[in-house]
Image 1 (tube, rainbow, N blue to C red):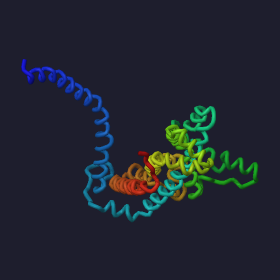
Image 2: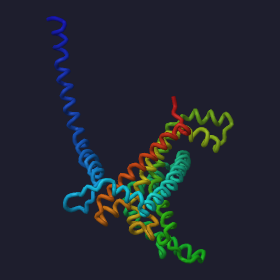
Image 3: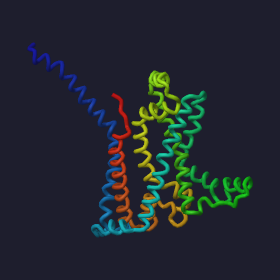
Length: 306
């Protein structure tokens, strides 16, 4: 038998196996791809097209061009929603990440670490609606916190959820508390990857605990910090359930109105799906801009090994 024939005889079955592997691979990927097509790509395309129409959910959409965008870009409500959303992101992301880093460093040095990790991680796997309802009972004017302050310090009951600024701070507080556990687990994994010899070398060189934290631990964790900051900012820009449940539909005087709640209010409360879709495109652009700025700034504070 000639050499080409032998080679063909050996490669034939392998080629058949590879084709079967490709078919099986496409078979297992198909559900995920189909779900992404039906629940992500098609809704995004529909929202993009509806942004240029006037539609109340019935009949055929009416094409109106850029009127929806002009309406939303001059809307005081959207402006208030953008400011509130950016305030939530600016407060919750740096404070939440800093607290998570400090807590992970402390937990990394104590015994019974799994027990504390479970306590911190419990809010992450708890329904956000349940979390909002529990904190609502704590923060209301006749709630636990106001009652404690009144009984111990004689302070008049404070309606934490009745004042626009206090309600916004309450949303920030609950957001930080509920996301702390996930950040701690991720930073703990990053700390476990730091070689003990690096910390020992820093200690031998005379670096104290604070110096080692800022000059060794933080630089080595900077890629994880960057990743978590991007994810946290995107999550903060999508805040909805807390303002919907905790402060009852965006709170007093739209004090906690966020962009996603604004989109919901226009689309599902007022049946103005064109305006709602235009607002969602504004949110998309804002998210892309902030993410791009974060990626542009990472060169100044993110240190990659190698």
